Amino acid sequence: MDFGDADADFTMCDLINPAPKRTRKLFSVMADYATFYRKTSGEYNEARKAVEDGQEQAKLSEEIKSLQSEIEHLKKAIVDSPEELRTEAETLRTNIKRLQEDCKAERFLSSEHSCSAGQRISDNAECMTMIENAAKLLAERFAELEKLGDFHVQISLLEQDESNVKSLLNEATRRRQQTADEAIRLTASVEEEVKQHERAREIYSSRLRDLKAKKEELTNAVKALTQKDSFVRGEAHQIKLEMQRLGKERIDETETARTNCAELMTRFRDLVVKYQLAEKKFDAHSAAFMNVLHSLNRALDKAESLVELQGEESMNQG
Image (cartoon, rainbow, N blue to C red; front, side, top):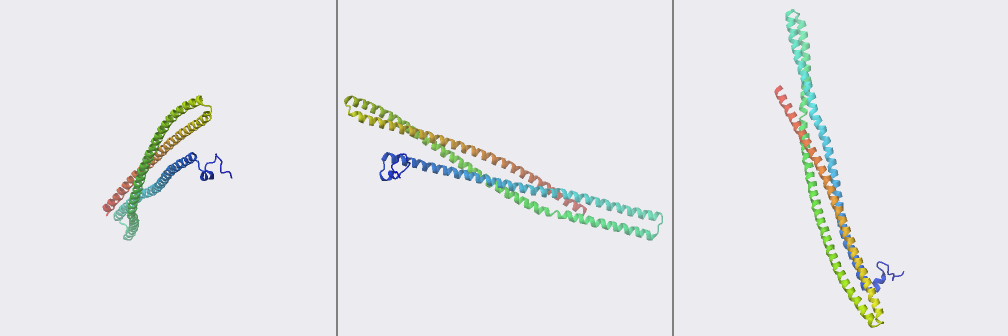
């Protein structure tokens, strides 16, 4: 293996016989890469945390949909069932009144036409049997109405679920605020890095001016030495090569600084766009959840009013 390859990134030759300039350059590249790795690792952790928060918000949205479906089912049972039972109870009351009126009419007609006592007793017994059966049916319907009191327990459980969902919403809001604070902190860090690169660019510009001044001095020295002695021409050529090398290093350093600044600005813009999208998504979920909570409150109020109305009717009938 040829360890003296000048194009290799880092060879055994650099350890056995290190060149000061090449070693400084390699260590500078390694230091820049370590700094870049720390920054990208931090950005990856921030992005992963934002994704986890988004997944948790999606899970919360699914729980809200499930709770809304259960609420709609119970609301339908609370609202529709009492209406049906009330209609049946009114029908039974009407039938009882009609039977009672029929019995009275029969007794009146029997007395008017002097019907036999046995026939009147038979008719009255039949009417009483029908009245008793209707009364039993009415009692069963009222028992079913009383069973609706169990829905109070379910309403209480729904209120507890509502409280839990509100707690989850508060937790999601807190995490959103935490994510926003971290995004602000990251933005400040990126801005500080941009400022550092601006300062580095100013340093490079100052060094460029110094190199230009040194180049002029060397050029003048070369001209003077060339005029004095031809032997010095070789040394002047070496100086010229050194000047070219310094100029190339200056160009490479300037290009690297520009590339780093452009990458930082691109990452900063991407982070701002991701944060804005996450904020819009969270606001949409929050608005939908508040609509569900309003619907739940209206359903609970309506259910409580229906139960209170049924209780008042039962007391009036008693």
